[in-house]
Length: 449
Image 1: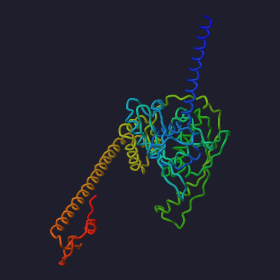
Image 2: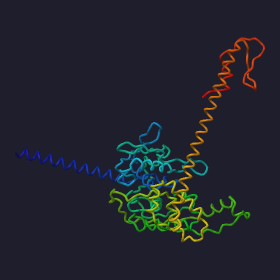
Image 3: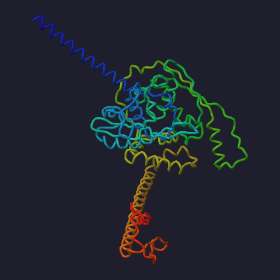
Image 4: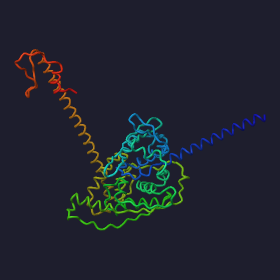
């Protein structure tokens, strides 16, 4: 009986040990997928369009599922690196929902293709889509990465940055807040509690993907930087950031250039964007080691351009705009917002813009939807026209070959050559029938694909 009791006790101890081990491993996996690790240079690359907040989350969630200590990733038949993400993880973070999983993934896939970076410098470089392709099965999403991008995520033994998704998407709720937090966090060394980031206005915009937006620092600071820093400093992010900008000397017009000329605008932009911006970054007591992965708040479908413009004009009814983006698509919405901005650019009553936007945006969406439909019809028409021309060319080439064959049979003892009128003619001299090689020489003028 005593032996039976001790054996039973041993089984219980082993069972409890295995449960604790499983929970520990689960906790480790959770921490791992909550932490995205990149090379420091990754966050310093020039950005193209970054898509929506969903793709912002998808980017960091993908990176969080890469083992930064590994030297390679599995690759597909096209040589693209493959990162596996469980669908459960996407649902937990709010990237997709179970009710419309396929349509949401399709939309995220299209938006992910807008995530691009420029690798290189002004003399030589290339623009690359970070995640060119996505596929999925019943349980997982497979995100493809270009081999040229992979070194920013693999074999990171130094000069790396850790970004906690729990901070990025649970503590911060705005697109620009996350962007500025990532850039500043990237500049703060792990073993340091203070850093000073000195960056030109133009370089800062390029890292944010805003090269052609906000030419004036005051507007940019009011619409992007100030709201982002307010959120970072008042949330439990572990950072306290202040910003200052140097005073530039007044721009002098060289050679009295016309202010509407391209040369003047280019020189003025270069002058304004040379302004140096200083971010004073201080690390507070950071609670990130105690944070847990959880369900994120709803992630926006709006593009960064739409977010920036709505912030600029003070339009706050984001629920209405989110509904329009879900109904018509973020691309159509962005086109409509751009049309509204152009139409009201010279409107002196800036305070009335939110009301005008509320009343007229659906009208502009209607214009853009019709324009997109017309563009599709034109592209399909052009494709049909090209196909018809190709079929016509093939029919004419076949007819010419048939005529040549019939002429050859009708004139077996005469030689024939090309002329400008009908492609062949007979000579009065009786000669042997041309060889197949000679005959093919004439046929080559009328190829059939």
